[in-house]
Image (cartoon, rainbow, N blue to C red):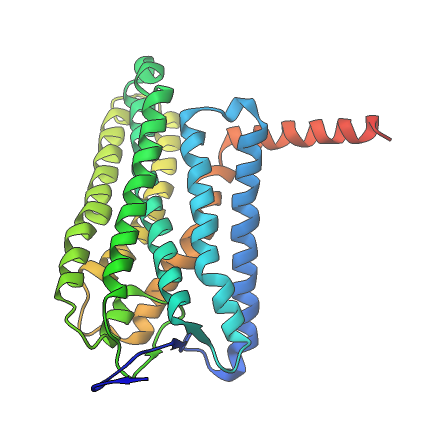
Length: 316
């Protein structure tokens, strides 16, 4: 439908991943395995935290929300990607595209705030162990969670409303595997200055500030650990902090490079690979980094499994 020199776009075509046709089945299997691993890993953590009373602590309250966020974050893009890899016409409706963008931003921003809450929790636990219970009260934990959800819902809704006001030209091809905000802005015919300004301002709130707070927390943790004379404690703490920071750096580094510091030299292939790192790889790694290497989680897994085994034999 024409309106002057513009076209009302009813759907978009997603180009997907830059994969050769002969490699399509291989990458389909790979991404399917990664998505199943992400779903099972995060579901396992959610179930264990719900069933084991020993894990009803502030740290695991935040972790359960992170697992839920990772599960949803991956599910926003991966099922559509897998479907499109088997489809000859990988299209998505205009409304579906905006919906996908909204939930993508929602769970990406939520993960950012949850990582801050978890870093603060570890900072209090290590630097102020005697005051941990008083500081990390149920009221504070609930307030941090509610604030995280409210902020992310508002930020995501604002970006989506601003995107919905734009007009799009006849070119409806998105060189990506999901409805990425920056890719959509490149297709817009109308003025995008307000969108870019909001991205820059809110990007500082949602990405830069949490990133600095996390590194500040871990810097204080490292400073406190170095005062301990036990080599075993220092090695264990640095191992944990290092693995956490590696995932944080992967998540924030790719997002900052893509959205806040975009380079004109960035090719579509490079941007797509960077997007895969934080949309696919990070949600899959988080259960292993934050939980499955954790002794509390392993203990909870043994207790729950033993309880189910005993119940099964008694019911025979």
